[in-house]
Image (cartoon, rainbow, N blue to C red; front, side, top):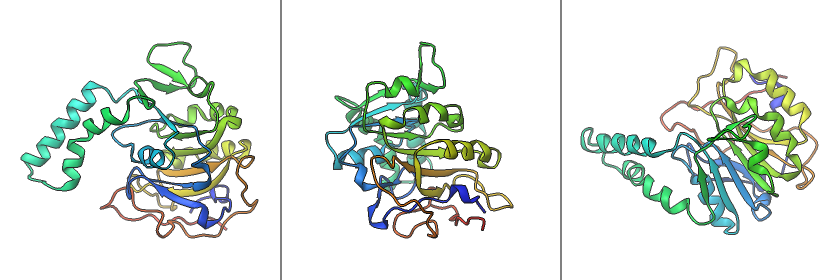
Length: 260
């Protein structure tokens, strides 16, 4: 079971919408932020930007700025090699495989013009080091930002910087990894930040321990000074029907329960 401080605050169920893939890559947000958002800053990209694409389809004025130092020429070379291997040697010829095969084409078409991908690592303090950038630098001169963070455990190093940019944020989507050993850090962040948690999902790519605590959770936090929410916790059962889906399609679903 999860502690009570992870339980979301209540926003209208009708305000919630899922954007992006049905499985991994899709996120639940408050749809009121869509028209009010000028920039999405995505920290962590890999080969998945279906959320950003779906968001921009609804708000074409919005720009997408992504940071991921791991998505380089070598990344795409390995990606193509693996996709071709599974298609021609394992004979997995299906829509999903061909979609992954042509992902690199979609990448070059999507990240052009006002959409940008920078091969930089998100760090606490970049000190002008090449190949690194801090949250403060990434958000500088931006307003009405949707910040999305999936950086495989490094998120705990930048939580203070996230909170310092509260006034610039509309919404924060963040994945917390290795939850079992980092609950105190998350609690401190939630107690100190003015952002309010409005959605939670357990990522079933991670394991769940004997106490019912998942290894990875996804959370959506909103700026309550810009978007009104109720100052009370919800008693909804997660995953939410019609909004939440398993990240790993073939894995077991993780039901979230909170301590009394």
